View (cartoon, rainbow, N blue to C red):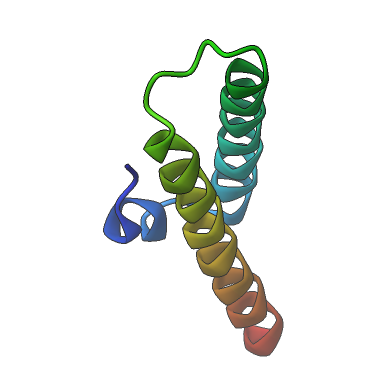
Length: 69
């Protein structure tokens, strides 16, 4: 699980790459679930929430950059 404090230290490009990595991991978990290989289905929920957390902080940083200009 990614902490919000860790994500806030990253820049916009770092957050975008983090979101992509989290989405790729979530896709892998979905495929494991579809093929009956996923034992702990709670990891899907955790992955979704991590993606949402990263996207929220990304939007906050992007809007802060726009208002600073």
